Image 1 (cartoon, rainbow, N blue to C red):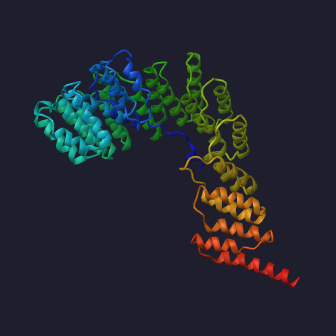
Image 2: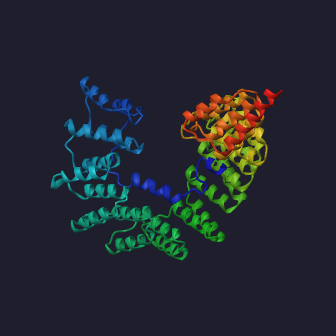
Image 3: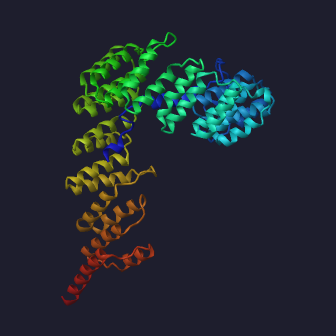
Length: 509
C-alpha cells in the first residue's frame, strides 16, 4: 500500500524521459523566436486546454490590430512546448483559414503533427492526402511518420518509410530515430540495432539520441556487452559530444546488472559532463547513487549543490528525500524536510509525503500519523490516501481503534473521486465498530463510507450489530438492505439470530 503512495518512480527511468522529450521536440519545424507580444500575452495565460483561443484571435482582428505570421508561429511553438496541442492546432487552423499565411511545407508539417496529436493518425493521413504535390516534402512525410510512430502503427510506419526511401526523403537521423522509437515503444528492442546499422549503411550519421536509444535496446535485453560496444563506438565518433544522460542510462543498466564498479565509473563520467546548474541531471545522479546504496555520494552531491548557491525547487527536495528513504536514512530525511520547510518554497504535499511513506514502510505508524497531524494543524493539505495507508499499518498491528480514527480522517478528506479505501481494511474496521462502537458512530462512519464506495453487506452487518447492542430493532435495516439488492448470507442470519435471542430474552423477562 505504502509503495503506491510514492509520488514519482523510484527507478528514475532516464531513457523513457529522454524518449518522451525526443517525441515532443525531435521534429521541430519552427525556429523563429520573438520578443513577447501583446497577442501572445493574451493567449498564453489560457492554460485550460478546453478554452478556445479563437475568440481572442477574432477579437484582435475586429479591434483592427495587425497579426503577424511570425507572432502566430511563436504562439504555436509555445503552445506545443507546453503540450497545449488543441489550442496550438486551433491557432494553426485559424492562421490557414483566415488567409493570414500561405502555408509552406513547414507550416503544413506543424499542422499535420498537431492533427495527429489531437485527432489521431487517420485524420493526419486525410490531411496529408489532400496536400498538393509540392507540399509533400521530407518535412510533411516526416511529420506523418511521426504520427504513425506516436500511435505505434508498425505496418503503416514501415510502409510510409518505404515511400520516403523511394522519394529520397529518408536522409535525416530523425527518420531513423523515429523507427527506433517505434520498435522501443512496441517492445521489439532487438530490431533497434538493425535500424542503426541501416542508418549507417545509408550514410546518415547517428546523433546522440540514435546511439542512446540503441544503448537502451541492449540494456533492456540485458546484453551489457552489446551495450558497451555501442557506447565505445559512440565515444569514438568525432561528431559526437558525449553527454551526461548517455552515461547515466548506461550506469542504470550496470546497476541493474549488478556491475557496481562499472556503474560508478559511468556515474563519474556523467557528472564530469554535467553542468553544475543542471538540477535534472543532478537529481538523476542522486537517485542512481541511492539505488546503489551509496549514501556518501548522495550526501556529497546534495552538499555540492547547496555550496553552489543553487535554489532548490520542490522536485529537488522530493528526489533527495526519496533517495534517503530508499537508503533507510530517515533521520537525514527529517533534516532535509526541515530545510524544505524553511526554504520559502510553496507547499507541496508530495514533499512531506515522501517521508511519511518512509515511516510507513518501516512500520513507524505513530511518526507518520504525527507528521500528518502536524500538517493539518498548520492548515496544510493532506490526502486520504496517506491517512488510509497509516490505517492499513495500524490494522495489521492489531491496533484497530487507531486504524478507525485514521480512516475517519481519510474519509473526511475525500475529494479525489479516484481514491478508494483498502477494502480489507474497511472490512476489518466495519467488523470492529459493529462490535465496539455506538449506533450513532457506526451510522456516521457508514454514511461517510457510502460516499466513497458502493454500499455492501459488511456495512449493513456493522449497523445491525450496533443496533442490536443498543437495543434497537433492525426491521428498517433489513428493508433497506433488500432495496439495495443485497442478499442475506450466513453471517446475516447469525447476526439476526442474536437479535431474536435478545428480543425473546426481553419478552421472557
